Length: 141
Image 1 (cartoon, rainbow, N blue to C red):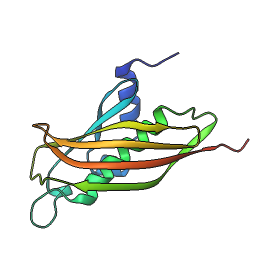
Image 2: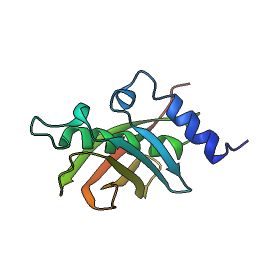
Image 3: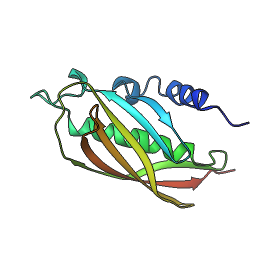
Image 4: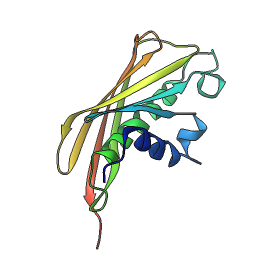
């Protein structure tokens, strides 16, 4: 039985308890057949000393939503997924509000996946462009 969108979002957010995602207040907010979207508040937890969004927090948001996308679209009964590389180009500073990360697949292979993650602010300005490579490996029986 396929989960409803609402139930899938609730399940994904519930497994984030006691993780970096909970610490950074990352919440998965939307999903579709080929994408996931999450948001993260920009506040003191993710600021650099000068009060702008830390690039490491942005990368953590991107890797979190990209990894979740790889998990959602992989047969987890047969495979486990691990991130193997992330890159981030930061284009604009943010001091408050929320940032949103949308993960979509550039390549969805049997073994490797490449995801494009676009991070935007509340006005849909592009903040960062990230790429995440993941690998799906068979579970031992």
